[in-house]
Amino acid sequence: MKVLVVNAGSSSIKYQLYNMDDSSVLAKGLCERIGVDGKIKHTVIGQDKWECNIPMPTHKEAISAVIDALVDKEHGCLESITEIEAIGHRIVQGGPYFSASVLVDDTVIEDLEKCIDLAPVHTQPHLYGIGGCRAALPDVPQVLVFDTAFHQTMPEEAYTYALPYELCQKYKIRRYGFHGTSHRYVSGRALDYLGLDPNNSKIVTCHLGNGSSISAVKNGKVIDTSMGFTPLEGVIMGTRCGSIDPAIVPFIMEKEGIEPKDMQDWMNKKCGIAGYSEIGSDMRDIEAALNEGNERAELIYKMLSYGIKKYIGSYAAAMGGLDAIVFTAGIGENTPIIREMSMEGLEFLGVEFDAEKNAAYPHVSEEVLLSKDSSRVKVAVIPTNEELVIAGDTMEVVKNNVKYERKYFD
Ligand code: ADP
Image 1 (cartoon, helix red, strand yellow):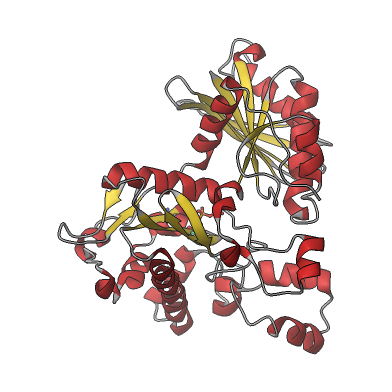
Image 2 (tube, rainbow, N blue to C red):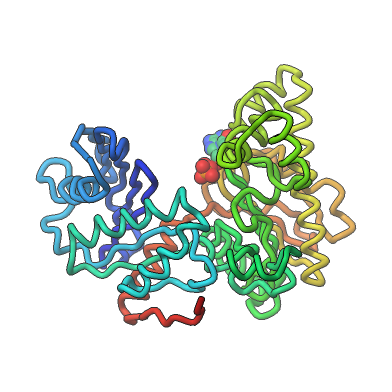
């Protein structure tokens, strides 16, 4: 089965075409400047990248451009568009409604529309992307795969904030967690790779990228995760502040005269690694500054690894033990110093980290074990593959005709 995976943002659409017979990627690309002018960057695997300016006033034209590129005689890889049997969409926020991937129908769209308030920056573009696909390929089944779904197993005490009950209910304020598709993939792979018992396993997964989140996965189910109502909570990130004392927010607003809507932007884009270091959000730039003796760059390393370590310790306590720690995503796969610093001092938990082996893997492209043979807690890097999970779920949901059953009523 050939599955098109779509990740629609406000002015861009990323896509990958999978052949699920062997889980290979046939083509991938990016439509950008949607609503401005429009450009497609398209690559058939094994061939050169092809770029073209195509007017994309809305997401519908962008999806049409993707389809045209895929069947293009010169730059495409499909004989006919009928070869695409299903489309899978990455959806950032499924709210309290969605705890698994679902086939798109009108009820699903209705409930996804209710998530707009919870994640306005992402949900509206997702709806445009789905609408664009429905318009361009009306007979092709579409599936939604949610970043929040894997976290829906958290117990109430982990996902509830101590705010007035009425407001929590009214605005659906709770911890949702994000990067669920990645946490699900790497924790699932860890069971196989590390030979753990799926029904008796305690894993902490550390997804460290521009946005970072850490999850406690006990017996295959998330029991806690560091991101919260929004992706702002948790460890420090590229441009997001991570967890801070909430009183700092009105304090800065008052002192600096910042309006609520601008404060959202400020916390998401002006803080974190970039904000404090005044160097940038990219760990490669922080590393370069560190090598030049920049003290704040050094502090960033300490702050991030200290934050990771605190989550690992608290999640080991929450799970009543620990079998494995998994690193993944841009920083997890490419920054050995962060891995080493966050493992320092965890011997008391049963972690014996192989620092020499770690240093030999500045860039990890396949699964690698970084703990010593004698280590009771295994430490591994498992490169994430969210698109493959989306393609796999899409195939399963379509094959099994998994219809959405509304379980949460407002
Ligand atoms: P996103 O959350 O945008 O998907 P990524 O998972 O790509 O983010 O992670 C981005 C971070 O990973 C950046 O801080 C970047 O420095 C780091 N990173 C990504 N690739 C590399 C690499 N090849 N070498 C060093 N660092 C990298």
